[in-house]
Amino acid sequence: MSDAPAASAAASPASAAVASAAVEVVGVDKIFTGKKKATVTALENIDLTVAPGEFVSLIGPSGCGKSTLLRLIADLDAPTAGTVTVFGKTARQARIDQEYGIAFQQAGLLPWRTVSGNIELPLELHGVAGAARKARSAELLALVGLSDFAESYPDQLSGGMQQRVAIARSLAESPRLLLMDEPFGALDEMTRERMQTELVRITAETGAAVVFVTHSIPEAVYLSNRVVVMSPRPGRIRDILTVSLGSAAERTEQLRENEAFFENVSRVRELLHGEAPVGIRGVETR
Amino acid sequence: MSTATPRPASSARTVLAPVLLGVVALALWQLLIVVFEVKPFIVPGPLAIGEQFGGSFGSVLQGAVVTGGNALVGLVIGGVLGILFAVIAALIRVIDELSAAVIAALAVVPIVALAPVLYTMFGAGAETARQLVAAIAVFIPVYINTLRGLRQVRPVHRDLMHVYAASAWQLTRTVTVPGALPFIFTGLRIASSLAVISALIAEYFGGPVGGLGKSITSAASSSNYPLAWAYVLGAILVGLLFYCVTLGIEKFATRHYKPST
Image (cartoon, rainbow over all chains, first blue to last red; front, side, top):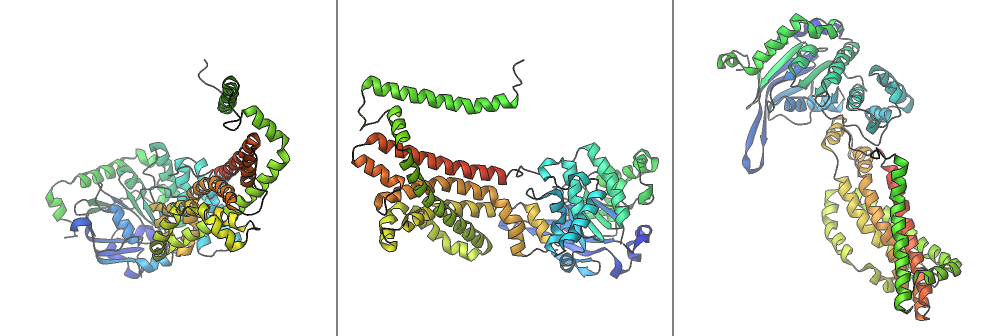
């Protein structure tokens, strides 16, 4: 949280000092070897740096490896080649030190635990005392606007509310980095927009860096400082677009009607659909 | 207009329908006995059985307490051991692989046939043999169901616990075992009826008098068939009680286990 002014230092990856980068991915390949020796190159030659406090979205069609890249950062999978560092540590060490919080497309709540029990789960596993856990879960429930549901069970909540609980849980240990894999993918459009606005507010309040996987263009533009556009087979970074829509505080509901917003949306769309092979060759990854 | 039936009415119907069917069946049974003059040693009528049940209620109840008590002890011992071994087998793969053959063999042992051997081991005056027979009968379904339940961890929960760098024991305690509860209870529910049946049949092979099984054989050997059937009715009621209680506990413990996102 002490890295507050980081949001402005987003644009050029090279300028960020190596040690202080939230995420540093260098030359990463990921090859899945299936049965009968069939291999799938999920990721090829990926370079990506995320500065502290920066919001970066990974966008691309299915099979472009955006979720795989997130799983590599989270140390849920290991890269075939290259290195992944999180706050200067190896991905594995960062996971063990609980340097990041994570939310998936499925809320993944434990149905036999109450809402507050679910939020307290990581704290409980890491030996935080009962009173401190209670205080923290109350704080987080207020943050996601679910204070009245502390003693409810997940099956009594709507999908959007469950996802808010999952986000509260990912914030439980005040991580400086949030990894989110299409957390709003299963929600209806209206709930989705409300959740996006809330996420912008929450990240502004916590100052955490975010790596956000999505396949929604407006969602990526609305939320991000930078949008990483990926292409499939093999998964590569096609281009990285800097979105200049102001700080989190300026990103209100009105932004969705804004001219600059639409401009960015169409820029991402053009990149996604790929103008010509020339466009691909121009990218620094080659 | 009659399409939307309120809940109380529909639940009354679900209770009333089988009760009505039962009454009709009993009346039909009694009618057949009277019309065809069926002798009591073939099948006694429901009225005769009911009369004996009412008349010797104290003795039936006493037998039910003895047999039900043995079944309960067996259910608890077999259930606890079944769950415990399944957790160990799920945690340590080698144990699972080593014990798979033993479990398969144990599952096909005619457990009740062990009773005479157990009576000589523990003495014919003790209930231990019967409780052990029930415990072995319970162990198998509980073990198999629990182990299957422990293997059902959802990938998102597995990922989450990996992210939290949780130990194997933490994963078992907070995710695997609670997640397996519906399976454990299914095992216990099947086992509860098995426990009663095993405890009862084990009485046929010796041991102290007083249980329902012994009472059925002694009533039958003295040609008092309606009384024998009254004891059978008692055994059915004990089995139903076991089944309903485990079902009730299951419903309560897994009340929040609806599929969630």
